[in-house]
Image (cartoon, rainbow, N blue to C red; front, side, top):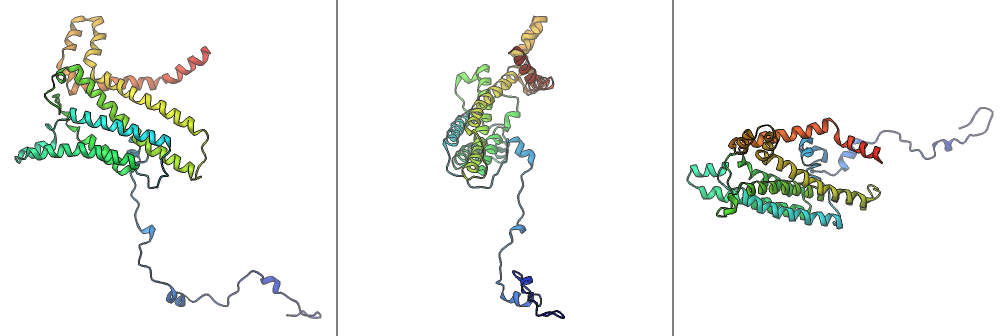
Length: 310
């Protein structure tokens, strides 16, 4: 290329690093060279999403699709605690949940195969314990979830008003106080097992993210110490709520007795207060008290009181 009155001009530097094609690449030729792929595209497989309200009930994601690194000391401690509470919970479930009154026992009795209902009842308890043990040790949330469902499903018969126990023949179980304390222990260990087993998954996720460099967390030991303290508060709160609910026929007469001792004595011996309706009434009263404490923001006021004193 040359300009008028001047010599040839070099314009090659304008095209350095650039690819100039005379035409678009042939799609027909490219289609002939491409290998045929019979696999299903990843975006064509629908993702299974668990509703957020179910996640909220169990304190976090139900199913986490990731591989964990080998457990650290904190995770192993939580695993041993979850398995220990599971074994106690399994024994209490066997003691407190007879097969009578369940849907499967009623259905099998109708066809004359009551032993089949008993077998299904024991299968639910054993599968709940076995799946919980395997899921906690392997950190597999699918088995932990099955354990939750089995151990809760087997106790649905408690909607009945008659108190029965799966482990019969023991005289001390006839004592009303012992019966209620066993029920309190059951509720406490159920809450503890569900909390610690979910804690195994949460701390495994945290430890995996830290050791793989995905996140940076300062003072992990402080987080672990706070969680251990919270594990002491959880069963304490559960025990207080269960005690206030089940011992309503002893608690309410204490206040009524100040005004009318005769009415207090009648309430203490009332069958209605110890029935399903009485338990429901006790639950309503307990949660009304808790709701009132949240409404007046009692923890904040107590904290402000301590700050003002200091």
